[in-house]
Structure formats: structure tokens, C-alpha cells
Image 1: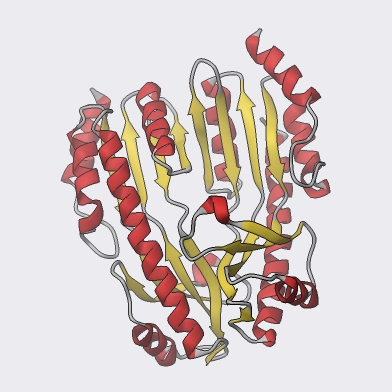
Image 2 (image 1 turned 30 degrees about the vertical axis):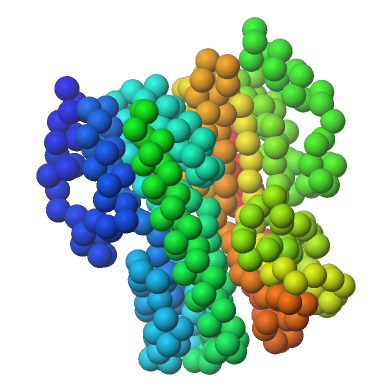
Amino acid sequence: MSFDNNKKMALSKQDKSKKGSLDAPIAGLVQAINASPDLYTTSSCSGRIVLLTQPMSAKKDQSGWIFASHEPVMPADVLKAIRLFRGNDAVWFRMEGFILHACCRTIGDAARLVLLARDAGIKRSGIISATDRKISVEIIDTERIDCPIAADGRLAVSESYVQWLVEVANQKLERTREKIKKVKEAFASF
Amino acid sequence: MSFDNNKKMALSKQDKSKKGSLDAPIAGLVQAINASPDLYTTSSCSGRIVLLTQPMSAKKDQSGWIFASHEPVMPADVLKAIRLFRGNDAVWFRMEGFILHACCRTIGDAARLVLLARDAGIKRSGIISATDRKISVEIIDTERIDCPIAADGRLAVSESYVQWLVEVANQKLERTREKIKKVKEAFASF
């Protein structure tokens, strides 16, 4: 009964993400998972392009976001966000593939979900908690860009490089969305 | 008995990595894990800095390595490898944190190992296989740099940017090794 109660509670909660709502490209997969009596999602992101500020100490609690998009971006938007940032911290350009967390009724359900995701090409998938209280799975696509592009208030690369980076990031965003579809199709046989 | 046989087989095999031997910074942790009767490692890397070539299609089977180091690198070495590469493919600069795979006797052992790694700060840790035949855990540090820096035979960034990138990568390599030590210390209470 505890799993069913937890599921009910989780699905009735308000969306706690910075965005405050479910990303459209991953909504179908999330709904399919939540329609299973043995699973429910606790968080998801359909992939994004962000700019993070980070002090040289690389302390995470001192990091901040100055730009975030779940849609393809324009180089001008990225350059503008960097220009507007007043600080000496390094600014990192990051593209992250999709991510999804799901709670599972049994360890067998969790193992099947991981297998399904890995078979669909999402290699960073695993059971991240397996206690009496909670069994949960993390599915992460490996599409990624992660590099510092500004520091001390100055761009460390050329604008044409930012243009290229954005182009590659937008392609990766498209690719991660294709992978979401692949996982959703595979999930039909869960 | 099957787990014990598999462990014996795995530990007697020749090292299959490109490097052909165990990285010194992770050897202590690997040995500690293998000293446990309920675990054995199947692969590990103590973190590395690599240059990968990748066609625009991003097909992994067409990717290649043109540089790899498990030790801090010099900007000149990176620049030289790019200069020597004859091809139009994009060249990606990548720093990867440490990674370790371990087989576990029971799902309980696997869950405890994941918990230990996550508590020690290695958030990308999970049970990636949980079948009757094999229970295995993946532990991956998230320290990372991943960006294209050359294409069409030309560097797309300045040499001073490569210098900065290498500096940050070397710092991250140091940090991933500190995390290996942390996991090893935590493992004493496994």
C-alpha cells in the first residue's frame, strides 16, 4: 500500500522545478510511465541549454544560472546573457541531454526499466536507490557539452565559436528528443 | 557459487583497457573492492583528458581518439595532437572524471555500494544490471569538460583558450582523484 500512497502523493504535488511545469517533449513519456501501476516519475527534463556561473573554487553552492532554455537557442541570446552578467566568475556553456527519475514498486520493475532504457541507447541508466522505503531509477542521456567560455567579465572565445557551439548544442537537443521518443516506443512493451 | 566463479574468472583475465593496466590513482580503491568477498571490479578509470574526433553526423562508430592522458597535460601536447590530425572531423576536448564498474553478490550489496558512493559525493552511481545472472554497479564522477575545439583542420579557439581549458581540466583531474580517495575512505566501513 505504501507505494500506492507515495505515488498518489507524488503525482498530486505541485511541480517543484525552476520551470514550474512539465517539458512538452518529455510529457508523453512521463504520462506513459505514470500510467503504469508499478511506476511513477519524480522529476524529468527534456534536455536544455544553460549558462552557469562558477567561481574558480568550483563550489557548487556558489554556482548560478544566468541563462536556461529547453528550446533551440540563438547565438545572440547566449552572447547577451554573458554581456549582462556582472561578475568575475567563469561562465560555463552547458548542454544537457534528457533526464528522468522514476520510483518503482519492486526491484524487478526497476531492473526492467533500466534494461529497457539501456537497450534504447540511454547508457547512463541505473537504480540509484534500493531500500525498503524507496526504489528509484535514474535515466540520463549522455548528449553533452560542458565548457567554460567567459571569465573576468570577458568572452574567452570568438563570437563565431559561440555560433558553432550553439549550432552543435541545438543539434544535440534535437537528438536527445529523438531518444526520448525511442524510450517511449520501447516503453510500450514494458 | 556462480558469483565466486565469475569473480575468480574476472580477476584472472588480462586487462582489456586501451591502456592495458590499472591506473595508479584508482588501484587502492579497486584492490579494496576486490578484497571484499561480495564484490569485484570489472573496469575502472581514474579520470582522463582526451581528444576525440567526431564526424558531424556524431556517429560513435566513426569517432576516434587522437590523444589520451591519465595525468595532467600541457597545452603544447594538446595543440600538437590537433596539428598532427589530418582530417575534417570536429575534434572534441574532453575531461572525464573517474569511473568504476563492480559486480555484486546480492542486490543488497549493490544497493549499499551505491549508497556509499552517493554519500561520498559521487552522484552518478547506480545499479545498472540486476538479473539472476549479473548484478552490477556503475560509479561515475561528474567532473567533466566536453566541447568541440577544432574542425576542418583548424583550431576554432585561441591558443590561450586551450591553455585555460587545459588548466581547468588538470584541476578537475586533481579533484576527481580526491573523490576517489573519499570513496576509498568511505569503503572502509562497507
